[in-house]
Amino acid sequence: MTNRGNVGILGCGSAKPANGHMQASQLLTLCDKQFLIDCGEGVQTTLAHNGWRVARLDNIFISHLHGDHCFGLLGLLSTWGMLGRTRSISVFAQPDLEKLLRPLLNYFCSDMPYEVHFEHINPNHHEVVYSDRTLTVESLPLKHKVPCCGFLFREKQRLPHILPEAIERYGISIADIAKIKNGCDYTTSSGEVIPNAALTRPANKPVSYAYCSDTAYSEKIIPWIDGIDLLYHEATYLNENIDRAKRNMHSTAAQAATIAKMANVKQLIIGHYSSNIKDENQLLAEAQQVFPNTLLAREGQRYAF
Amino acid sequence: MTNRGNVGILGCGSAKPANGHMQASQLLTLCDKQFLIDCGEGVQTTLAHNGWRVARLDNIFISHLHGDHCFGLLGLLSTWGMLGRTRSISVFAQPDLEKLLRPLLNYFCSDMPYEVHFEHINPNHHEVVYSDRTLTVESLPLKHKVPCCGFLFREKQRLPHILPEAIERYGISIADIAKIKNGCDYTTSSGEVIPNAALTRPANKPVSYAYCSDTAYSEKIIPWIDGIDLLYHEATYLNENIDRAKRNMHSTAAQAATIAKMANVKQLIIGHYSSNIKDENQLLAEAQQVFPNTLLAREGQRYAF
Image (cartoon, rainbow over all chains, first blue to last red; front, top):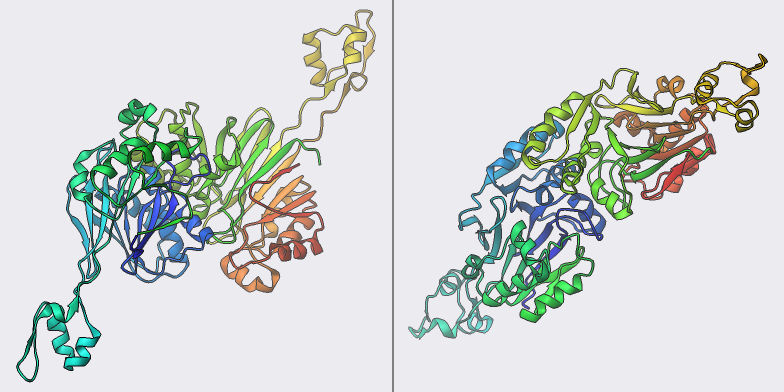
């Protein structure tokens, strides 16, 4: 565990409220930025009750247009207006969401002090939907009753660190530091060429997190998430209900673990528990038989990676 | 306390989530029927987490179109569809709510197994908006930033009870029992006239409950709620913030209590607490100075009347 990112669970239940769970939502922190992934009903309240502040949250990603993944959005955006937010927010979602929500935003939040931008995504395409200086977000087409995509958050490879002792030894200027970080060797004032490898150490390997919900078992996603640090994969049912999982286009715990194993991910979190699951440790046990490094999602917990 | 009705608090916070409160919603039980009053975000989850079943709930009343009073409606209606509800539901609200919600219901709940009827009300009129065999609901125009009305639920006067010993003594038939309950005297087979008063005892006095939120201090409502059994009146602020209350068109605890006192109600519940109120007992103390029989609303509690 590199501990450079973490995901906080706001809701890990499925559509019907049960067993104390909230509907799907996660707060991801990566590269000193926050991202909200899905926004089931109650997110604004859960954020407040957890005391989770979202001062660095400027982007929201919605996997699909089922109510349990997006009905909390209107309330959250509305409350941010009341709290005096001024920074604009981007909502990455299928175009229908803007069509549906814009009239309500106009009506209920007519005096909103900030802008809501809807960034339209196509959940059937695997592509980079967001990119900034430090990370990218890719859509991961999933297999569900309605168009649906997961999201892969991946740090960009950082430039190597220049060794402080090299700077001191050779009196390297700031301009030259930038060149060296980009791969150049260094020539001293006496003409000696110091190879780049002697001046730098590689930056940490980028970390990565994927959110895959809601989805039937789909091996198609495996190459996209190969070797990532942390995978959240839905596990709505136990394998004894595999037919039901297939019918409802959800996954079982064993199926989630199989994906994690085949994709060589470092760690798996399962969630999106069916309201019929009384003891989620059964899901955990089932998943761990296939992929031992599995954890249960729990509301209010943060999982570092 | 006659204990013939009760109101369960689903949410008694105000718009900004804080201090563990949920947004406005109440589940009223009266005459063996249930009524939902307002539906802030999270009602479906709170109902489930409280274990409150709503098998007798066929009517929802929405006071006004601020998000904290209606953003839970879509999720609740949607989940009822998933749970297999087949009985239609009536939503009493201003016409705009249907205009706003119908497109979302059509999109998210296209396979809904029951009908949602919107019954349009005019919050500026004091009138009976619902009536059945056993009770009426009146709209109570309030004084808020947007058109808003409270609701007065009032049992109808029941027919008197016929005395079992009279039935036995005079051998009264079922047909005659109905006549006597409607006020007739009874003539025995020997021609003796038994006055109605000797055959009956009066039914209980009807009970009544009023919900008044959101509102600035408004004496206009006093005659409408005169002598009712239980009044819920918003008390967003302490009197030290009376200017803020006026500006935001809300009430202070002392103002709520003044209304209760002037209207001679039997009991008062206050709620809709500002997110800035850290100790609600201050609100209670302030209200009780004016109207001692005041209680604080608390989520998950039921208040009998």
